[in-house]
Length: 144
Image 1 (cartoon, rainbow, N blue to C red):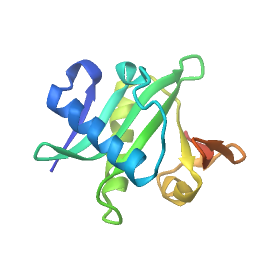
Image 2 (image 1 turned 135 degrees about the horizontal axis):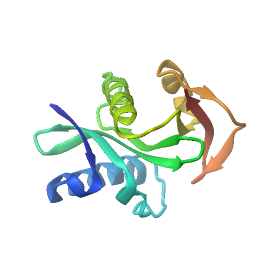
Image 3 (image 1 turned 120 degrees about the horizontal axis):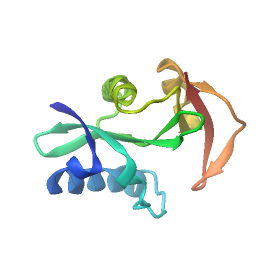
Image 4 (image 1 turned 90 degrees about the horizontal axis):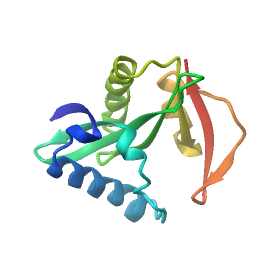
C-alpha cells in the first residue's frame, strides 16, 4: 500500500480511472448519491490517495476554495476498507500534504452528519447548522 498526493496533470490514466471507480463505488453504489461527480473541480485539486496495487482504496481531493480567506476545501473523502483506520491515516497524511501544497490558513469540509466524530478527531470543528446536500444531512466543519 502506497500513499500519493498529486495534481490532476500528474495522475496517470490508470490512477484517474481507479479514483473515479472508487468514487462511484462509495458514493453511487454504497450511499446511493446520484449527482454529477465530474464537476471540473478535479482539474484544480490535489488528489490524495492510497493505492494497493493499482486499486485506489482511500481517496480525497483538496482545492483552494477561497483564496482571500486562504481556505482549502476537502471533499470526496472515501475509504473502501471501513473500520480499519484507513480514513484516519489518509486524512493525517493528506493534511500534511495540503499544508505543503497550498498557502492556507484553514481547511474546510462538508461533513456528513454521521461522520462528524471522525472529523472532530482530526481537529475539525462544526461551524454551521445542519444542511442537506444530495439528500444527506451535512455540517460545515473547519480546521485551523
